[in-house]
Length: 152
Image (cartoon, rainbow, N blue to C red; front, side, top):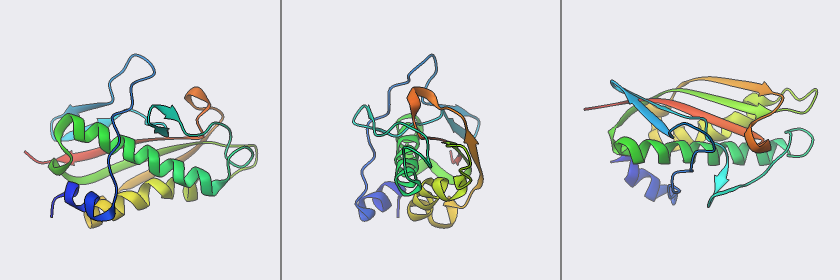
């Protein structure tokens, strides 16, 4: 089964590639790896939420936004090389704009990790970092970037 077929089976549609908010491109290929730029939780061109997780945004909401970020990253990969060329997910880095004292970053980033597992199965198992930060671009609560391996 192809990854795009798996998305359809899950009832998930890739969004349009989010327009960069500065001087960069959504994804770059280097050899057999594709690196995505950090993806924010844009939905139809609009940031889905702003604020700090643990104060303005609940951890559960932030987990959903991390999933949206991962979908945006997959859309960037699909636009560059086609999603079906992915062999495996190598690494995910999730950044969580955290209120003082909030330490639940891993649970928030699980929103992205779980989506990758649903779509890619064992090929979606990845190395990961879940990092708490003071601020993210445009006041976003989460940001995700991916590194994937692709076949020829």
